[in-house]
Image (cartoon, rainbow, N blue to C red; front, side, top):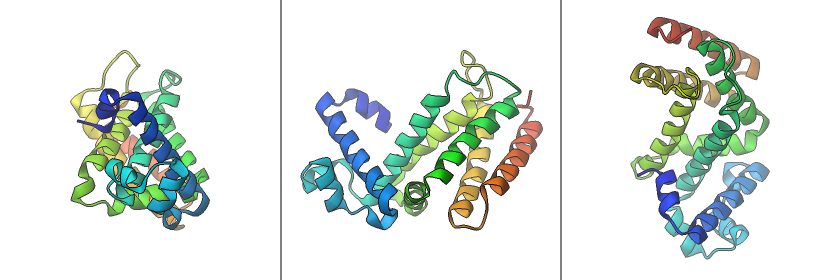
Length: 201
């Protein structure tokens, strides 16, 4: 069951509490990056007991990975239905470039969330899978009009693009790549992968 599924089944008060916790973590990460996200401080900002926080998120890694998943979902929702123009390659590029620009603009926050994703162990596997599902679905859906679901091939292509993109994002956030360089590499990757798979329009 994904985090989204569990949210649907949880009482509204629990969903609201979880959102407050994520909001607090995002605020702290935006202010001071990964090290600024201390569980006790998160609990205080979210107005929940520390024990309650740990019931929702067993560690800071769980918390920040979940925040990344929510961020991707919000960005996805902002794009959906607003970009039907151009070839599948163009749409995929615009979607992933939009996420890239958001992460580049919010470097402390994105650095904290991506660091948590890269350091997550098997205990956070479910949270990581939820993030992966959102990102891959986000990319794959851009290959078609909203009323046409992606194929298995589209999903495979989205996995490949997503993995290359994530490596580039890590390089960007470490200061070893500029946004322009990342977008250039991203454009070349999308064209190569989608052309080889037959997904390009």
